[in-house]
Length: 260
Length: 260
DNA sequence: TTCGTTTGTTAGATTAGTCTAACAGAAATA
DNA sequence: TATTTCTGTTAGACTAATCTAACAAACGAA
Image (tube, rainbow over all chains, first blue to last red; front, side, top):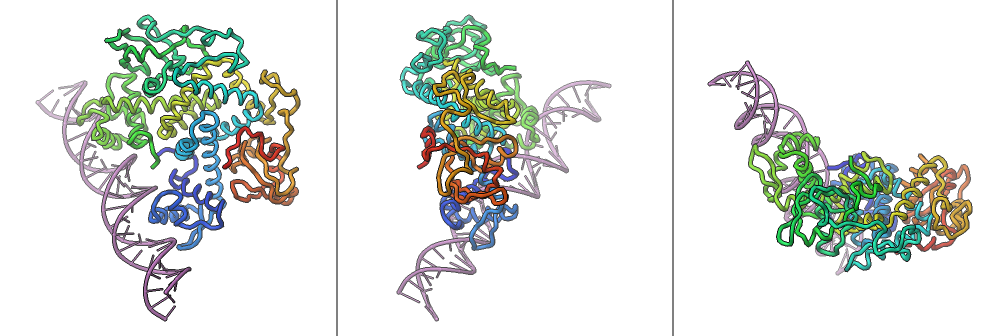
């Protein structure tokens, strides 16, 4: 349905990757092994092997062992590498659980382009070359995630020794709350100051750092705020609007300007 | 084929997202607009609208305007948010071109789990709260990418003021080259010291930072090295093996230990 | 009001991927 | 050797998504 980089489908890439993985730990790969590993029936594997065989990605004659061709090996390895890179990013940088990361990576690996893959690989090399920076990111971000109950992102000297600004409660420049804006003002979101359910709801609705919001109509505890995002007006109960912190200047920090 | 988070397919999520985007900029959404935006024929859109209608994600009666239901709006927004997060990560952090990033994000957005999405959003908030760190990552990584011809990752004080180790040519601890290892030794990869084609080939083959390699048989300029990776032996011409730098100790730096 | 033009639907084909159920070949066992 | 078990294939059904070609409805303009 979507492009996969190679000229084969995501499903076939998965079959190749699975064969690769099996051959990496045992001497032969059979239909049954593949079916088991991929949680499909052998009846699904058979025709898939036929398709792979036609595309000259595996060597296979009926009821025999399965071998990867040069070309098949290449695609399998590349897919596996994408998988590893994505999975490592999710676990090592974002701190996602191994299981969830594997899940996500399994699906996304088919759609990461060559250039993105290369950059992601370079990113890990960069972090490896800068161990101090890597530690800073991991512990800093880890710290932020830990006090999830209050979900306050504070950049203090204890987290980030780079800080040049004063070690205030906040991040140096004061943030505004969405509810304090004048009607009609347009700002960029700096942070969602909420945890759990409210945080999830706001993020699902597109309230992410760097996104631009316009306050259309202020509200009260009874009357929801109306806020424009992506050119779309949506209602926001006061309890939620309170949690949206924005930059004080219209342009945001300028750092993340990705508007046209 | 793969799980999408919502209980609908990636294709239907795309339709919802497109409708959302169209309604964000104009007052009505018609079959023709959707077909044009998604580069499919109107004959493909019609049945898709029927499927969405059955799932109560849009309100649609034949030959009329298309409206999102509450539930459809929710899925559309969440998909869009995932898209934006992925696209921003690819452009802002990895420095991928906007076009390529859009492409990748378009496909991957359907498979990023809720928890990963939330973490990615938090990651941007974290960087926003630590502007110094953000600058460090962007400029540092950017610098590394720039001198692509020699593709040397050096962590010098000019890039990273955090450096506690000496400002040597290399990253503090000396790296070894794969070709200098004793046969049978197992090391983690630190960096690929090559650009362009050789770099691409090595990465495609799974030679990424943190991956474990075992030198099975040393080679010469004529005889390729044999190296084990993912339990798989592969031949590596000397010219390529020379570019693989590994950590001197068996455990790697310990930072990225993701072996079982 | 009538006739193009635009817009949307339907029919029918195709591809990919999955399943269950039935069958076939090979290996193991009695 | 005969029979049972394991393994793999095939047939047939189904779903999702796309296309082309033909048709139908609505709109606009003369």
